[in-house]
Image (cartoon, rainbow, N blue to C red):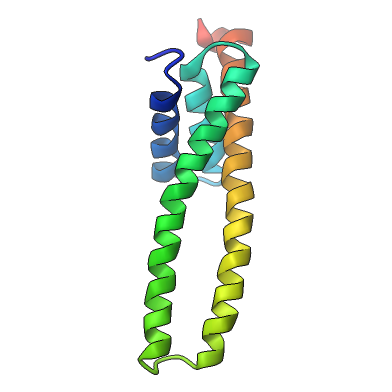
Length: 126
């Protein structure tokens, strides 16, 4: 594809992560691996494109999380949920957000490194 086009490869990896995440465990590894495989270069390039892919995927996840939080906050304001749940929900959402950031970006970086490894050190890349 576009070897050494980091942004394009990262977006392709992030889209793969988003598509696979609903039914494949550890989907960021696969998205990062795709980005790292397409990127080429050395292991650092694979790692770098995996991190960028993970950050783009994290933005997608953050958009969904904000939507969910807005819906929950609307339920609290309309009286559908107790007010204490709103504060608990915010703390929970922050903790889930931090975990998601480490999970998505970390696994995408690992996948980027693995994708580069597969391209140059195995027979799959030939």
